[in-house]
Length: 357
Image (tube, rainbow, N blue to C red):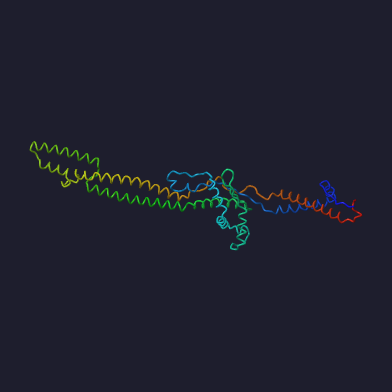
């Protein structure tokens, strides 16, 4: 009666020993082939830029005018927005065109769907944008050219920054237009009120409320005292009465007189207060407009660059020793499986008389 052979790890030893030259040859051949392949593989370098996105609203003119500062805190929405921008196809196509990656990846001229998809896939595979544990973004790009990898990583940071700014640029322009309209309105109102004030001064003959009031009181007292003395002593009473009338009546011939002064005091006070108020508001509006215009033209960065990407000083991959060792181990395992199956096949095909009981 025959029995089905069983194999164990202990039983594998004699089998390997019988096939040791075959196993050694296979492993040696695998080592030679893997060494050649590993040496032919190009070095791949990795460059990483680290940055913290800011809240784009902190660069709006209204916040800057009110003393707002650029916030460096990495909010979840700011981090997600920066990562989404960096992984978008629009940004990928812009960088691919800028660095002519169709030629670099040897994909052929653009325009063909298969070529475009290949380049986009290759670019996306070499790009990694992750949110690290310190609430910063690590943007990594790998390439066979270490200088190109660093240039692309830095360019991607700038593109993310630019697109991030565009998100609030229209709103900032609208705010700037509002500041301009407010300044122009106040400028027109101030000029109109100033002309009204000048006209009122000419109409009522008032050019300085406090000083002019003191002058008129002094002149009235002196003229009236002189008139009383003239009446008592028989002096020029008529002349003094005309002088007193000129000081007190608007039709007395004097430009500066008490009647006009009293009539115009309230109007002049109102116009003066109005002009002073408009002047203060106009200066503030002009300052706000200039600050807002400067903030937009200055293109305040929406990212805080922690670490610029530099060309790598050592390769990222391939790890040639690991490739050779892995190939040898895999070949050894496959060779053992092969000879074990071969031994099993031979055992099952032996004549019954030769099989062990």
